[in-house]
Length: 91
Image (cartoon, rainbow, N blue to C red; front, top):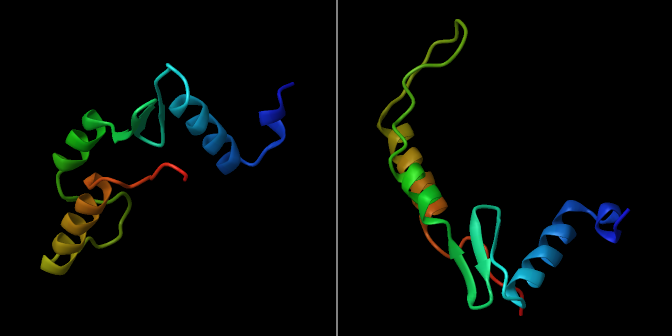
């Protein structure tokens, strides 16, 4: 059993990110590529989000209403999710 198994998930991610940043390894945490020079957004995931179409249906019998306000919010959310830095390296 490793010491990481007893840590909260957030702390495990931070330890892993710090390890990757200070080693020659490269890894991915929460959609970000971490390596010795810093943190970058995973471009493949950004591309996927940018191309994500607006929702058109929902499951079940619920009425689906998608107006201009919904579309603006959806576009703003995509912008927030694809604009770096979403995650920053600790000092």
